[in-house]
Structures are given as C-alpha cells and as structure tokens.
Image 1 (spheres, rainbow, N blue to C red):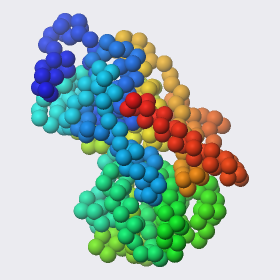
Image 2 (image 1 turned 60 degrees about the vertical axis):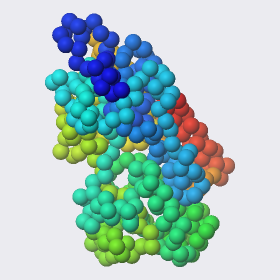
Image 3 (image 1 turned 90 degrees about the horizontal axis):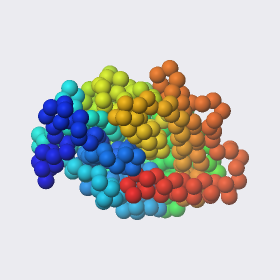
Image 4 (image 1 turned 135 degrees about the vertical axis):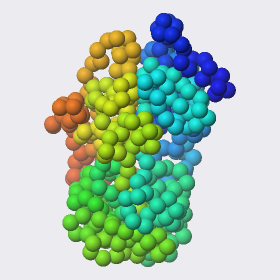
Length: 415
C-alpha cells in the first residue's frame, strides 16, 4: 500500500514541466495537535492539494487533561483520538516513521526507504525527553520513576504507583528549567495528585523540586493549594535547592545541591528538545529546538520546510496544545500562499492555558502574540490571568471552560 502511494502522488514526478502540471503536494510529519490541525487546515483551504500525514501510531494520546487520568478522575480512553476523519477528508495517513529528509530533492524518507515527494513540508514532531540531562535518569529509570510527560503507558504507570503507595508517603515531582512542554503542567499535576491524596491518602505529602525560581500562574496555584490542600504541597525553587542534580531510581532518591529526598513515588520531568526527526531534518539548532520565521513558520535552516508546535522556537509563546493548534492554522495559510506565489499575511496568535487544581476548580492564563524582531512577542496588555480573588463559582466555570476547550481543539484536530 505504501509503495503504491509512494509511486503515485508523493514520489518525485520527473521533469520540472511534469511537476508543474501536478497538484501541489504537502507532507506533514507528526499527527499530534500541530500536525493534524495543519493537515486539516491546508486541505480545507485548498482541496486540490495532495496531502500526506506521516504518523506511525494508529491513534493519538492527548497530554491535556492527562493529569486528571493520573488523579483517577478521567479515563485514559478519553485521551485517545484516531485519524479516520482525517482520512475521510482525502488526507492520506501514512502509518510509517519518517527517518530522514532529503531537502534538495524535497523528499521524506520513511522507515522502509519509501520516499514521499513534497512541494512544502510541515514538521510537527513534538518533543523528545533528554535522558542524558540528569545523572541516573534514563529510559530504564523511567520505569521506576515515571516522567509521564508523553501521555500513554507512563501516565498509567504513575497512576498505579500512587494507588499502591501507603498513606503517609512522599510524592516528589522534579521540574526542569524552561523551555519545556506545558509550563503550568507540573503544578496542575501536583494539584490533582493532591486531590487524589486528600480523598484517599490524606496523611501523604507532595514535594516539588524546581529548577526555576518562579513558575507560570504561581500566585494562583499557591492560593489554590492553601485553600484546597493546606500543608500538603511544598514547592522548592532553584535558589533554595530545588534543582535535582542526580537520581537513584532503585531507591527513588533525588539529590540536590542542598541534600537528598527519598520518595515513595517520584515523578521526574526531564529537560526536553524537539523530536528526533527535527535533528535528522537539520531544522534544529544547538539548543535542540527549531528556529523559524514567525510569519510563516518556515525553518530558518532548511528552505521549504515549516516547523510548528512544541518543536519550534516560539519566542514568548509557550509550548502548549493551544499554541500548536494556533501555529498550525497560521502555517497552513502561509503554506497555501507560498504555493500560490503570494505573500503571506502577518499573523496574530493567541494562547490560552487552563489548569485544574481540582475537578471543579480551574484557573487560566492567556496571551496574544505577534512577530517582532524575528520572534513571536507578547502584545503588552492583551493577555492576563484569572483573578486572584475570584469566588469558587468562577473557578468552577473555568474548569468547565477548560473541558469545553479540550472538546473544541480535539474536534478541530481530529474531527
């Protein structure tokens, strides 16, 4: 099937004259929020374009709301989304792994050496975890001290460990320095784990060891912790010994410059970088992330290749599912304009991030971003956070807004 596909619309079509007469071809690598949203947006805006979505998995497991799975208030099945709707729209789902890019020939090489030809390529590989960043922490250690930063089996592993922990146990969460996927995510996770512990194991404690001295929505989180989980959650920033320097997975011990902490359950969130195909494609720089033109999201390193979502260097715009979806739409319009030989319009992008501190307690932060000096800059005064003194009724509404947002974005991405 794949060889038939590669011999058809997405192979090199020979002479420039023959290629000029064919429909434009766009290949998208990565079937998460960024890639799926981009593929659907491009196809919807110009149905003539021949689209291929390269994604080896038969379904996508969403990270947003996965912290609720860890806390036992949401099923893992609710996080799974397939590609049937995308295929029904005329987008070819290629269930293969891309192993390299041949930019001069404009081809994507798959694991079985089949080549897909493109006029424009969109790379949306998400993140890879840097298992070399914390001494003692690698893929094997993650089976004892889960990261759960890619939703799936790791999410369920962390949930099972919490269920098996004795009442009175210590849960330690290690948080990396910026940038990383979903900046408020570790603190939402701590909140929802606290909700589980308060309900089932109320003598237990949570310790957050952080490589930063401040974090997203900090005042809102700390106020919520004081109201909902007094005395249960302790946060230690970098300046006071929060940076984890080494771990021992067999004893679940985390060491910092100030001492060591032995956990009953340890959640290690390591530093991250763009997914592996970004490096193989040559679109990632020495930081491990991908510099892009903030107007088109075209790579600054490889022409005709666009990078969106967590892998891209987004300036002030955080790495989130909302961001991925917003960048996908801007990139889709830019790709179509470039294929038509038209100048892309300068975009305005929005990001909103909802966080749950309990199933009925939500907070949010929003920002507006525009290109400035080669990056995406926040528009001053255009965003903001939830009110610090909002009543419980507003917190409940925000929790519902977060659920509604998730339903909307998954519908846009996966149908």
